[in-house]
Image (cartoon, rainbow, N blue to C red; front, side, top):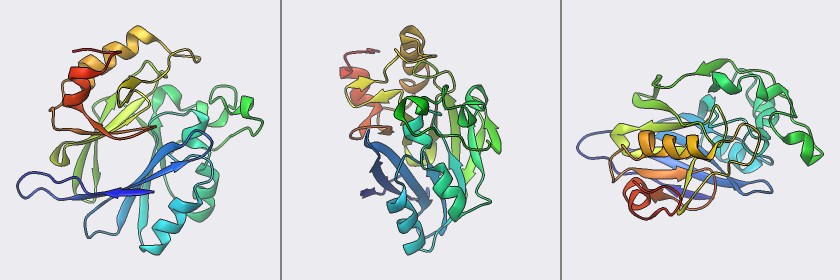
Length: 224
């Protein structure tokens, strides 16, 4: 579990980000809130989300959204526990993967021996959607290629991007799974992520954080 507070320029609000590497694939899941606020978002919920639930309760936070970067099992396996803890917590995912939450074959959980089938979503996302976390703006960026409905959540006033499994530090998401497309993922990264400011901090679905500027110059899989 790691914590960080991206420092925006000027008088923009500071975001507090708590990272949890959960489950057999050490999937990065995030609790994000405005500094000093009690409303939070959960972005992705892998297997064994107990540490996330305990953190939210310990800090007296109120989750307002469970936002999913995509619907692979290691990013949704903890949804049932979140729904038991907060029955009314809305779940949001890109429209292209809305049916995956309830289908263990599509979300790949059938192969784990522990099929995941959850209701929802309560909201479908589309490229360019404008969301707001306690007054902090967030833009949905559709980045298909690792999966058809993969998205990133970009907080422009905080120079922060939750990138899902599209872009990693020195790597990119695998494209040999159903719905994957290497050329499409390269295009998504070049046209959508690499157009963000160099200073943008990237919070990936696995592994350490990085920046857009660093990946644009050095990522061996997708060069600018």
